[in-house]
Image (cartoon, rainbow, N blue to C red):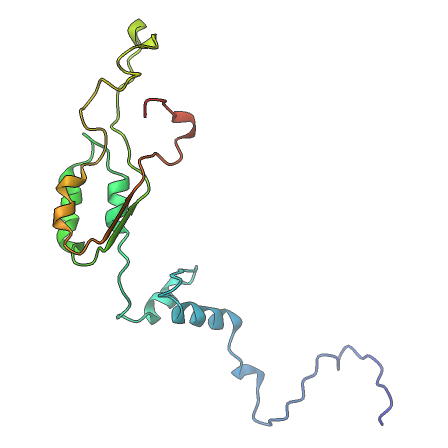
Length: 170
């Protein structure tokens, strides 16, 4: 048995490799290992880290396309403000790829607030939703027949993050 060696800070972190060819320079950087893991598992968990260029360059071109662009356009569509041709213009580009639409908000039309004594009464037509356009949100009828591969449609009639701009009739 060897006698115990005193703790010398210079020798505490010393590595003696059994393989004489081993070198610390050969060890991959931990961040690169993490990025390689993201690339290998991108289909199950599509994550784009801050080094997205590294990940995007290494992704397989055979991965299925998950198109959220059309969903974003519909979610930001405002009746009488956004041109429906903007939505329909995207259809030729994505109609063969969109299998699911998951629309998480539909914005109502912008109405000018008119203060009058009639509007302050609780039985006014504006509180009952009787004034304004006959249609309050995006008309899916102009779009659905054009998406030939659409299998699922999920729509939530709400406005995300309305907080202080909340109106009961919306």
